[in-house]
Amino acid sequence: MNTKISLKSLMALFLIMGITAGLTAFFGYFSAKPMTIDVNTLKKRTNLIPVAIIGSGPAGLTSGIYGARSGIPTYIFEGNKPGGLLTETTEVENWPGETLILGPDLINKMHQQAQDLGVTFVADTIESIDTSQWPYMLTLESGVQVHALSVIIATGATPRRLGIPGESEYWGYGVTTCAVCDAPFRKGQDVIVIGGGDSAVEEAIQLAPHARTVTIMVRKDHMRAAARMQDRLRGYNNIKIRFNVDVKEVIGEQVEGQFGPIKRVTAVRVYDNKTNEEFIMNDIRGVFLAIGHIPNSQLFCEHIECDDNGYIKPQGRSQKTSLRGIFVAGDVADHVYRQAITSAGFGCMAMLDAAAFLGDIEFTDQLAEDIEAQMYYPETLGESTVLQPRTMQELKHIIAESKKPVIVDFYGDLCPSCLQMLPVYNRVAGEMADEAIFVKVNVDEAEDIVKHFNVLTVPCIMAITDGKPQKPAYRTMRRKELMSFVEAASSQQK
Ligand code: NDP
Image (cartoon, rainbow, N blue to C red; front, side):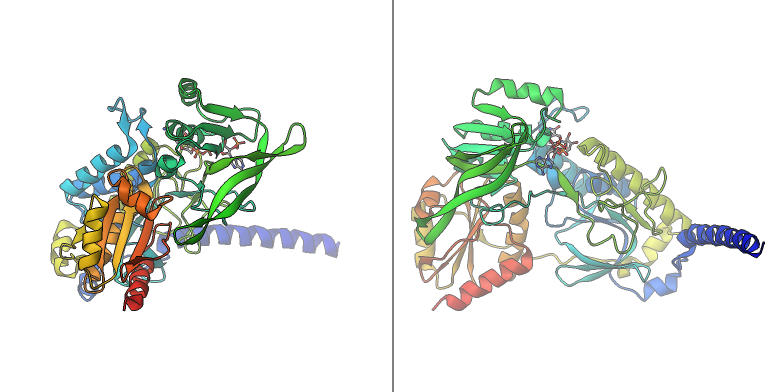
């Protein structure tokens, strides 16, 4: 009897606790932060931002366009990968109104539109966010701290890696996720693309005009890519597809190069999951990964609700997150649709939600005017002088004339990571003009320079100290890393 009563009371207790927890969560969402704007408080702050958009892919740019059009001072923090993943695609034929357009051209048009409407672009990356105070405090890579009344997270996703032996060792030496970057370096070679989605098809098509053979390695007995994308493969005799295969290892070797031993891929070890047989594919020089993406949400998941896979969870049919005043748009919250057009749609929704939030907290045009002096005005750097030699003779002349180290950035017109690196490079060139001479070389236009230095892939950053080339770095660098690279070169110069 006693047990019965205590069970009942226990159940009632749980029910009450459940309801209380639910109500707390419900009201907590709306009252977690002190959201009344006190103009006087804001007047004491500096570096204020009404809407901070983090990320500059289709989601972030569309948010920017909607924000600027509605007269809200709108800032886009471009991040490490300005333009996002769309800069890595070639032909886009499903953007309404554009029968056929290149991904980078589409993103450039959006960027231009946002800029013309008055969006402030900041060539910086958010390093941390403090949500324990409002306005939310964002710390930038440059060390600057800004205070955002509202935030739209549009940080996108990053290509996934396989995690197999040899992948890290040969990363940049044949293993990559960027076909447009590496295709010109794979002339006449045999390469593989791993994955069965639209990206795998894209990569294979980008590689086919350069490589001798391209084999798409699909783990299932069918491809996930859209039928129309698969149809595009038919036009290429040198593209093959192998089904039911798992690539288990990247194999390579070291060969003597101009700056000492360099690595290169030579083969892959493959497991046929239908026959249970393992075999080696020899003479493979390039391994291109196209196996999906992981959301760029690492900075945020300790503050706002994310799902088990790290995707930020929008609340209901909105782009609100679990924290009031913070919104989300694009691939960082979407593992289902993942299209440029849906990202743009979510970007529009996020800005409409952010504008409604600013309305709720009575952020008016008058208030915007009152706090104009407290707004964030990004530092504008003077024009940096980056030289662009087209021949080895021109570059030799620059090296001979210079008493400082010469830093060379090799880039390709179609290489997204190179194009993303250029603003960082220009910025550091402006900041460190006293320490080095900065040079950029377009690998498509200056073949003799590329041959002279035996450049294997782009992006490639090389320091020339006392007239001698040093071992190059085959990767994109963030501002701080590039600054350390220049400082190291400067300290080597006699
Ligand atoms: P998807 O997630 O669509 O496809 C990933 C592919 O990689 C799948 O075939 C998957 O296999 C395979 N894969 C995943 N993990 C592994 C692994 N460990 N080993 C081997 N294979 C693996 O990603 P995508 O990047 O291709 O596409 C993302 C989105 O972008 C899609 O919505 C796509 O439509 C869009 N997109 C559109 C383009 C265009 O329209 N031009 C171009 C490129 C992308 P499985 O099928 O077995 O899961």
